[in-house]
Image (tube, rainbow, N blue to C red; front, top):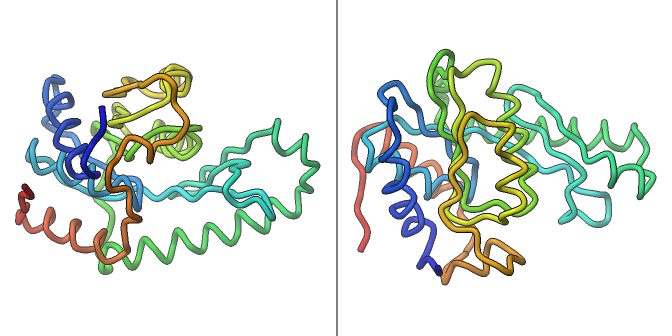
Length: 218
């Protein structure tokens, strides 16, 4: 399946998530930036509150696209020990990158929410949404950060590597991977429009959802 864009994918995902039971207390959490347009459509379709849950990739120095781990809102850190050991990345380098990404998380928390506090997740169902799963590092960090706080954690994505989807199933109460195409090389292959989501778009979608002004796109 090829989606037109992230919001098209979000509407398709909403049809699946909407079949779940016991969502009355749920909050939809989009992983910025690309997960937010997807999460927006799910929240609007199911009339659920929308918020963000920020995860930052820990990129290998000089190969930033290669993730050696991730850090999530609240401080949860996961590292890929195999990559760290194979590349011989010193602990002080990792600590410096973690510190930098934590500062970026704090900046985005302030910017995206316009100073408003996060929606409480304690004792609720948290539906974590991204635009797809490749390695799954970001979703894993988010899930581990939320498990001690939320009553139930559901991960939901329109596109995923089947292997990653299976690996993450032990980390959440339920996982929804709408499509797991074979072969799988990259999330963006399954979107006609995979342009980068901007900070302004994230702020706008959060504001619209918060004020019950969900917009529909053709």
